[in-house]
Length: 402
Image 1 (cartoon, rainbow, N blue to C red):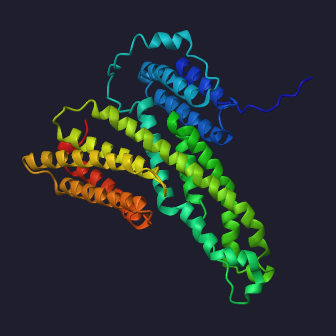
Image 2 (cartoon, rainbow, N blue to C red):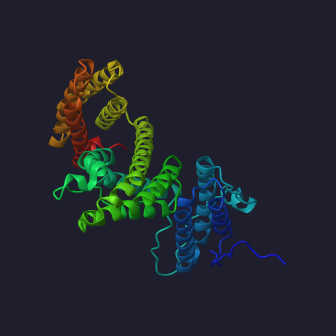
Image 3 (tube, rainbow, N blue to C red):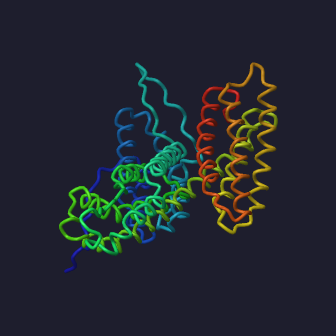
């Protein structure tokens, strides 16, 4: 007799052949060794969400069955390619019946009696966009709440003597711990990973980041409690010293995972906007605005690679390209009738200020000085430029891509 390695929970099929084939193949991929363990629960939840959505659509409106079947066949091809690229997982190809559906798109169902308004299941493209947006929201939360490198530097500065000398410092010595837990961000990442779509550029990095945050989180909570309850007064900082060796490498690993995750999102956004730029007319205000934003983001990549002894020439060259693009954008806005929204002209002013701060950073690096203050102003002004860019697109229809 043989004992199965694990029990499989039975699921109610959709009852549409192409959908059940797609979701079974998706589940097989989720079980493949190449998929990070942290990503598996989210993928499985996403599969269940899709199964329920497809099944409910058919149950509410039987005439939608051909459309749902066709959409599942489409999703099978798109998602299979994305996940194999991302995880090298075992994702079987669509059966011949599903492939045949793609050759004959279904006609809209004819109305019989009272019209029924049922929204079709979202396309794979729409699902991927929603998932990428959820990833971006989690990233924005991280940037606002957890500047880990600075928090770790503050922690070391505040506690270095305590960790070395402990009670020898006397009754007035204090243990300072200011790194808050990741409960909120972990929840956002779990929900984003669980969404029913594949975003190959981000999925693997999101799973790695989630694993790093989950590993770090209990240590943060324990040390926050330790400070809040002042237990360091009772044990002579013993627990603080023990946890220090655990805390630092975990914070560094989480910071590295955050950086990789953020970079993947940044690169995906640039690639998306480059594709969008190619579809816009040469003289359209939307094209000029998007082109300036892309040129600026490329300069930001140069800025992020700067170090104390870096060659600043590539960064200065990138700033010169931003300056040229921004002048052209300003000329475009000046020539618009009616005039461009004030948030749009405000964007060009913010970009001009950003260029100045960037040149100050390069000057201080060349002079072997401290570029930290102009670098901070550069970061703050860049964040303001992002807000101005979004306000311009929101308030002036003429500068919205597409």
